[in-house]
Image (tube, rainbow, N blue to C red; front, side, top):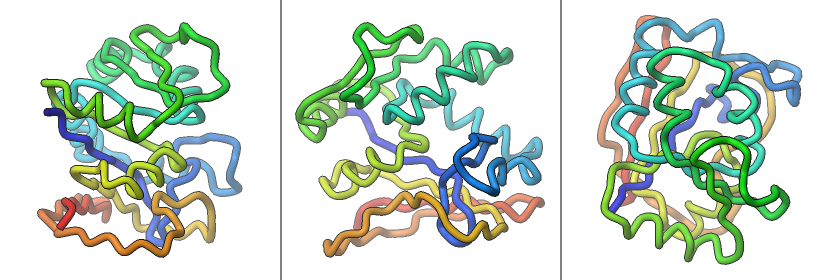
Length: 187
């Protein structure tokens, strides 16, 4: 069985939107001032340990526009690994190599992905998808990379729902930049 890991860049005020320069937010690129060698090594190690990515359409389009043009170990891994994309609008087949569209019963399709033998499935960005995963108890681990900056508003990774979800902290790792990775599993 594959473990599904939601890995997010977050501001102190809980915003995940536009961390890397996407033009959708007035404070886009808010991670750039804090990404040093330690943080980049953490993201590289996390990706190298994973077997695949599960992405929403918006994050997929952002990744597909950037990663095929990058070089290095992280880019090679991301470009080569299987990518499963939740979409109702993108045509099939998807243009970026090793990308497969997922449509229809998203929770059911994700359960099928998780039932396969293999390494972790990473979910980065993908706010709407993450809401669905949390609401359907499909998340095996949350990795929240919290950056010491406030941006005032934007997309958040957690659904606005009446459902109570309990998580158990399993670790905190801090970097000299002030960035901290908080890891949780469902209680």
